[in-house]
Length: 122
Image 1 (spheres, rainbow, N blue to C red):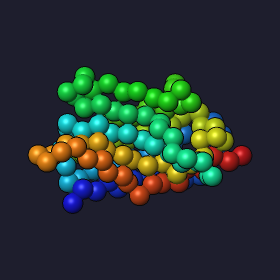
Image 2 (spheres, rainbow, N blue to C red):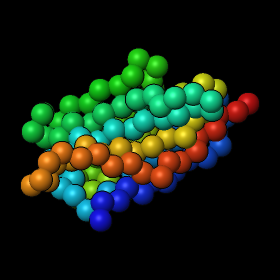
Image 3 (cartoon, rainbow, N blue to C red):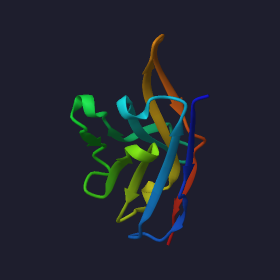
Image 4 (cartoon, rainbow, N blue to C red):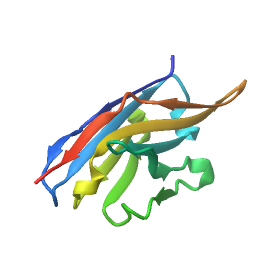
């Protein structure tokens, strides 16, 4: 069973930091692309960051709204991906989802975590 389990959300003041974590299971983590996606209250899904697998150079990309403040990273030995969020702003308030794009013998698939709430409030 493919599963993504998130943790680390909470309440933080503007300018503060949080670190989100996602533990993956049920697929080959090493060769998969991992993403963080968020949904602000009353808004649609917004892509935040991507960590590409080593086959694509292990690169990372970010939305303009979080560049310089957020950092995505992976611990391959633990099947975990993290999102370090610094200098948080009120507009960062959202439910944050861990997302995986992975391949099996039968095709390409995507999976989502349950989401974790991040609230930035003064």
